[in-house]
Length: 197
Ligand code: GAR
Image (cartoon, rainbow, N blue to C red; front, side):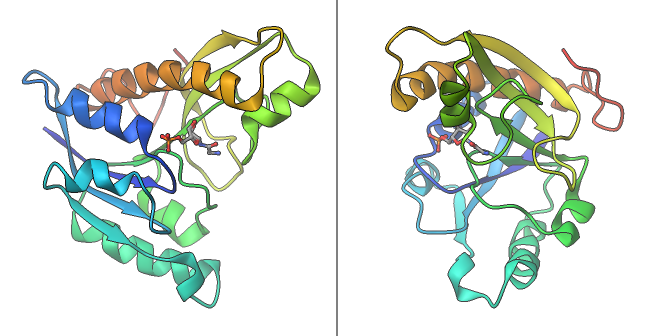
């Protein structure tokens, strides 16, 4: 059974979907803790299931390196086999990436390498593309440029707003995330040598 720590900043809707998958008897992973960089609403999905939570507030530290060090200490208390960034809206400092990668994955609401960064949905809309997508990647020290382990296209529809497009991307992200975690647990995905799927 693969043990997973999930890190979030927001609503945690993708986290919620992963937690629901983990409740299926045949799912080969379980979430041992959920952490956040702020008092994220999504922590409630863990709390209501009796799963450990922790908050390492970015603003309580002198800088990114200090914050990252404290976050890493919390994550490592749970000795996870995988860490999932599921809407963590902070760049991790190199100490954290180097300690956890390649067993560190991120969900992103665009078809990477298109539209990396914090505003993947907004940037796709602004560029006027007809298709964007969702991606799951291994996190490295770049900005959303680690190896892609799963991705799928999502059409941009006439009249789409950032919210409507994001809400159409998220179900795809959830499906890809649940399958990717399953494939990592069953070693169908080798994180040391991931092949895009
Ligand atoms: C998700 O779409 C995730 O891909 C995105 O934040 C959303 C979190 O939603 N992450 C990024 O944009 C990272 N650059 P949720 O909190 O409802 O799961």
